[in-house]
View (cartoon, rainbow, N blue to C red):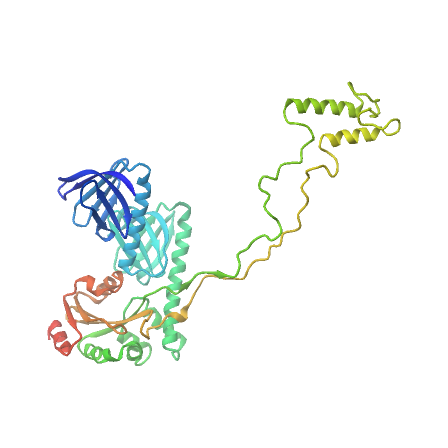
Length: 461
């Protein structure tokens, strides 16, 4: 929490309120507690943009057009901006149904919704999320055609949209390009593995062709699937559809052209695990013990003078009591033992073998490492069956300018009907995490006894 000066402005720029208050990011929202006033709580989903219009000022634009300006934050300004960035990123990822943990890159982005300017690029298991000052944009890997890197600029080709360009990544350009290539490859591998478990008897070549049509979140036309193998579409529907939903799908198939799709709901990436971390079992730390043994004299000028006198005595030089042969009275042993005088002189200076304070040698380190299982993907966890499927199965029916969305393996309360082309509706559903209700459908048909009649009326007879 930080104290700040605030101004609350209308969409027209008129001042609604100002004063002093406490600011914090908590519970998925920006919370302003003005002195003596009611608390203003702004959920991340209600924040349209965050900017710095001037030095030490944070400007938060709400979805309705109102503006909150915060100043005099001091050193907490950077932390507040970081918390808003992370909170908005997590909220956008949840709204888009992104799968897995994010790898984050700061970059300059140019795209439709995110606009052009500084942005946060988040790479998930199934999608690329670009969060700019003006909003967030999701790019599902299944709709990515190619990733090109040239002159430190990454260009991502997206089906049905203008290309996304990412720049000003510096040395992380290669890291992001490699990560995108790896995630694209892994996403396609998961689709092939899931279809292989769903259709174990299908020929490998036919399975590869089906996986190219049924990329994660993309609906493949039933006719194209049957062209790969007879009755392939009917087999997929039978295997992935709840028993009480099969009659409705049969009715929808008679009234429209069906396309079948599968969409991964949860991450199957598993982190690395191990028994014990690596450590050096033999060499103990020697913090503060790396200095040399040193001599027997005090530090400073007094020690230096004493060392000079001892050196002269040991060598029989001026001021010594011994002879030139090193037999000084202080360190020699008389005639014939002059060499020992030099020895003891050097010992007094800290030299010689076995000098006091010498650190003993340590044994060779034991660098045995613990057992480690690297990060991997649990492909067996991909299933469209059971009470909690990890893969959503759905169909899209196209007829007379309408597209019908029907979930096959989840107990959705209603069928949603949209205006538009199948490919555009498919992309919109994928960007919204297949929460069809969030896209304002043209019609919503409950699953009751009158479902078939209401569907016929919604499709124009």
